[in-house]
Image (cartoon, rainbow, N blue to C red; front, top):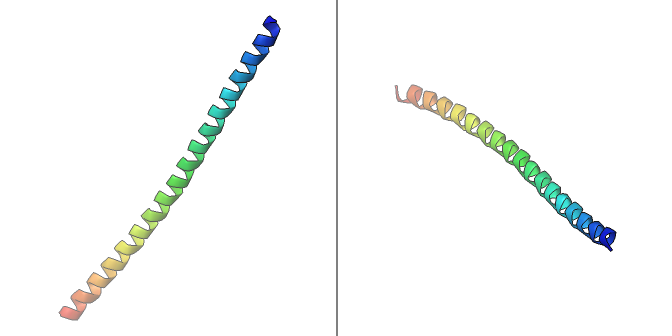
Length: 64
């Protein structure tokens, strides 16, 4: 009888560990995606900054 109860408890513990492990993997995956998106946004901001500098130079040249 005690062995049967221990098996049931062990199964529950294993299931809980599996769920926690799966959730941890999801969080890591989401963090990776967020980091890539942030890197892409930073690249876009740099491109816009260069474009603004170029436009500013052209405008100054046109006004002078």
